[in-house]
Length: 105
Image 1 (tube, helix red, strand yellow):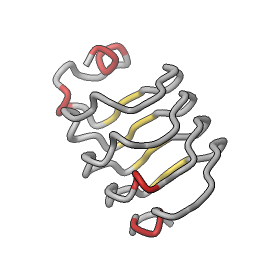
Image 2 (cartoon, rainbow, N blue to C red):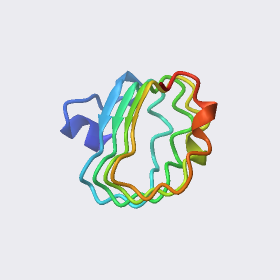
Image 3 (cartoon, helix red, strand yellow):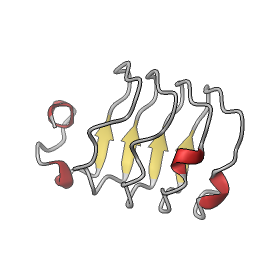
């Protein structure tokens, strides 16, 4: 909640439709369960090794995960509304899981 307010968001999690979490040195994604209305999330330039912790974001359309250490994309399968995904500068070894995202080009 604090990081949302710090970046111009709301302290009530479900009022936020975007969340800036870049450059925080996060190693995992957690604590986003109450942010149910997010449409855009910036998680680039962290130390993430997976995208676990996002599956509940049914409205998520845009996800920035570039410049992390992500190898597997299987945890993205539940993000059915996802239209834009940036995974550049990661260590992705397989694209398995992306076919489950019907709105990605």
